[in-house]
Image (cartoon, rainbow, N blue to C red; front, side, top):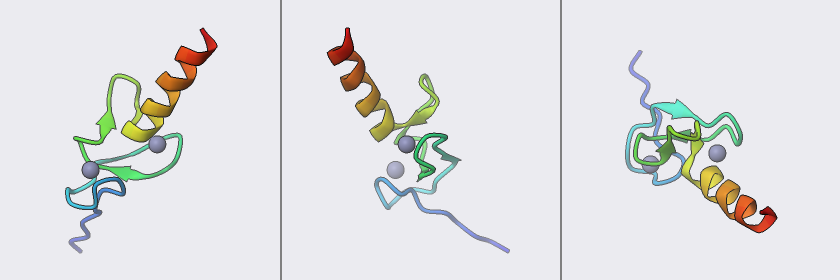
Length: 53
Ligand SMILES: [Zn+2]
Ligand SMILES: [Zn+2]
């Protein structure tokens, strides 16, 4: 079997991980490995954190 999962964010690259928060399959470009979550969750998180602090 040769199943290629396409990134749920950009829809172009091959996904290599799934986000532990939203469960989206994301490619390397769209994954924030520092925060261990996808770009969109990371963006939401940092925006939220800025507001809280
Ligand atoms: Zn992508
Ligand atoms: Zn996510």
